[in-house]
Image 1: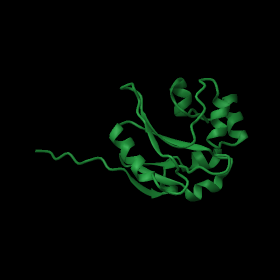
Image 2: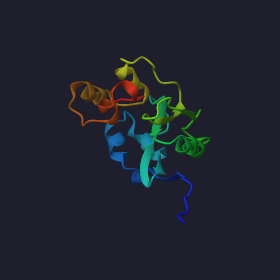
Image 3: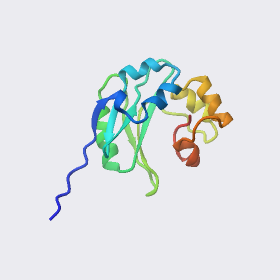
Image 4: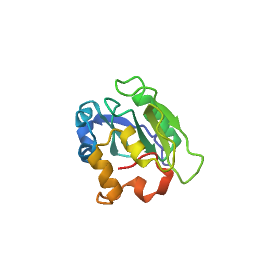
Length: 149
């Protein structure tokens, strides 16, 4: 008989996150990485960047609602992660989102505004629009993702 273990995300130092360099290259204020956390889900540490300066909010996409709820619990109450909430997906083939900070722009064609909201540098936003940057989950998934660059 196989025992199913509960899925429990946990925190690690930010530099252990797989996407640490991705954010370091794109944030307008890379000093935010000093307060960032790596959230390890399915043995994959992913970066949670706090709000601060021009960065008004952040988010993480997670495949299972239980993971989103547990990640929300891990981030809630920590400096730089105000108003942590879960936005469940109404679709079975789309990820759930853990958000913190303010409400992101909702307009489908406001990619530049979203980039500014999430604190990306102007150079990163321009690279996104010129197509010079590497493909990202948001650029390959259409407008379903809450972010860009």
